[in-house]
Image: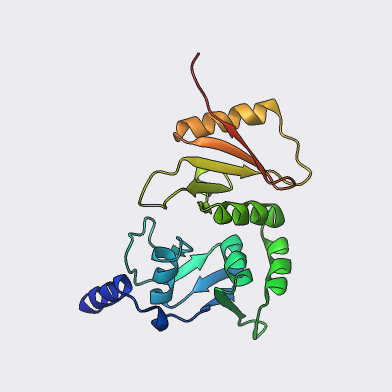
Length: 200
C-alpha cells in the first residue's frame, strides 16, 4: 500500500524525463498491452485517457497498479504519432506503423473507417473511447471519463454503407435511453450528422 501511495504521488508530480519518449507496448494474442503500470497510468491520466487498466472498470484519475490494454485504434494512433513502440513477441520484432495498419485491417472490424474518425476527433480536441457498452463505435468526451458524462456516442459508417430510416430511429432511441446525442460519422467526407429526440 505504501509503495502504491508513493508511486501515486510521483505520478502527480511526475518528471517527464522518467517516462520514455516512446512508451513500450507489446502485441500479444491480438491485444496491445502496456505492462508497466506507471507508463500505463501516465498515458491514461496525463496524456489523454489512452488505454483501459486491466481489471478496473472505472479507473480513477490516479496511479493504478495494473497493466493497461490499448484498443487497436488507440494503439495505431499512438504508434503512428511516435508515442509508443510495439513489440510482437511471436514474430520477435518491433512493428512499424505500416505493419500494424495491415494487422489492424485484418483483426478489427471497420478499422480504416474508424481510425479516420478517431484521428479527426482527437485532432479536434475530443477524447473518443471505445463505445461498445453503448452499442456504438465510440463514446466521446470533451474533458474525459470521470470528469463528465460523455455528451456523444458515435457510429462510424462503413465505406459502402447505406443507413435506413429504421436504423436512424433505432439509433436515436438508443442515444435517448443513455441521455446522449447520437452522431453518425462519414469517414469518406469526415462529416458528422447529429440526431437528437425532441418532443413537439
